[in-house]
Image (cartoon, rainbow, N blue to C red; front, side, top):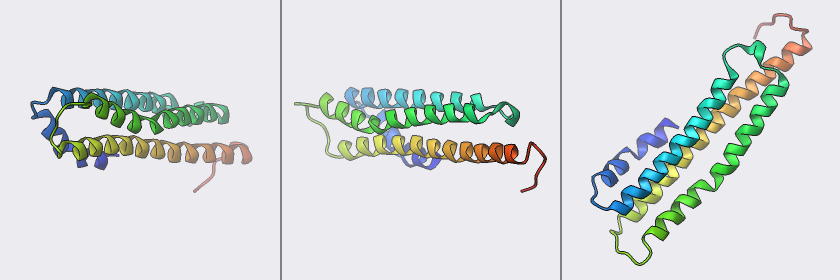
Length: 144
């Protein structure tokens, strides 16, 4: 996730140093969307807490549904960002180098969020497996 964002650092600097207001407006919107998705994921993680005793199978199942909803919404985000970028330039001129730069930024933002979701999914699966194992062992301590 972090590597995807690191990969576009130079692209973001290039757009931010540009005088093109349309590019900056698109980038600002994508950045805002990224922060909103990140906040949703952060809130989701915070709700798990560090105390596994609070995490029941039902709770984790409901969290998995929330992860899926965010993931489904995210699937259309890159397309939405690219469409808004294209529409904002309809009939206007721009540098050819700006097109791949903007598409690269939108793709890497989406990849970053997808990787974060994947990490949360793996972690929650491990947590679920531990709870199921604890139920099978009647909450007796076990070693891994």
